[in-house]
Image (cartoon, rainbow, N blue to C red):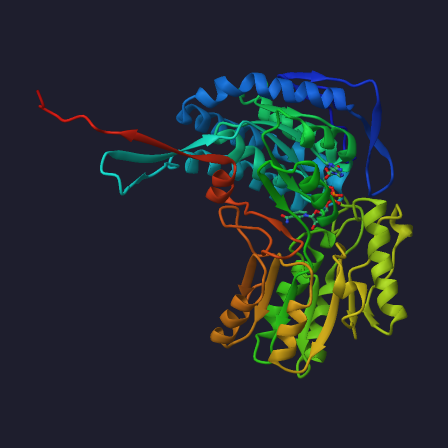
Length: 490
Ligand code: NAD
């Protein structure tokens, strides 16, 4: 790590307002150099159960806490995160592998997330509704669901948790949060900031451990009312089965195309597609999974993409001038290499990069890569690669572009570049993705806007973002009153 980080509390679980160690531990590893930077708890199912009990015990008082008080605490948490921003960002870089500038941006957005929740929750109301029966007064109110289980991945290990934690507590739920093992030290740092803002004990509980143990214990627990999960489609499926019957928010993988038509602004398209492929070393669910390029502009677009790739400096995220760090873990690094090798074996051509770079400090560095001649059968087209790779697939006309865009099991986020706005919107309506950005890349999103997978795809269920998460994390209750009182009757 760059400089010594001293956490006030040892890396530990945070349960019922206390930092608690666990007999079994697992290492937190810096992906840039393979060094162990801390020992983390490897929690048992029994520990997860204790966290659920703590969340349940805190539930009634927190649900009864006035909305304005809950909002005030969210504002205080935002300020605490701001105050600890650089400290959290340094741990984020050291444990996740992203460059410090990106880490600072992520932590800043996390503070914004708590402030956004504090604003929106004050405006969250129900309705009064008409009824056929004239004696009925019908109203709806929104209530917390209870104990939320929140399970999060390692690619944005500060922002993604906050997408659940902030709206979850603002709306009166209590939470048991199980972060990804490979980014759990930064989870402790975020929890420490949250705790410093005066959150009552038990409202958010942090349990560090393996998903299949600690995470699963939370998913199946009878006192966990609902689950918020961001991660892979494969784990999402397991959670949907194990948590069957509970309200589920599932934010899963993607392989979004960026479609570039012949009339597009190629400079803008190349910048957006490259940005979406190389940001966070491509470990983004909404990343540029593939570029679909009209044959007449494919060569010129490829050159521009190569020029963007060539600007990147791969290296230790703390080194001056580095713009792209290592991948986070061995599993994702192996997958990226396999996808590139599979494409090359089937005849695709590497225009730039294409290699792992163990000489840079660990086995997790992979060069920013541009590959042309990608076809439908290749894994780069069919699966989520989750690395810094731009696969270019050429199409001959609009019909083929649409067909290629539709030929995916995923449907998260898409970019379409064209000067013809009606063509752009028609494509947007036809593609079953949760987000289609016309004349922007697949990664464009802001935290108050709806984000999620299209129906019928593997990309998830429900929407995150602003009020959408708050609606998902609350119960819509209808209350009726029979009004048969005749005023003034004797
Ligand atoms: P993953 O599915 O391997 O793990 C996600 C989390 O689930 C981790 O905390 C893990 O410990 C836990 N987990 C694993 N098995 C579990 C089980 N049986 N029960 C309960 N929890 C379990 O995903 P990952 O590799 O950490 O993250 C990358 C994936 O996340 C990619 O597919 C990416 O597209 C997706 N993602 C989606 C979004 C979105 O908003 N749609 C955002 C970021 C990442």
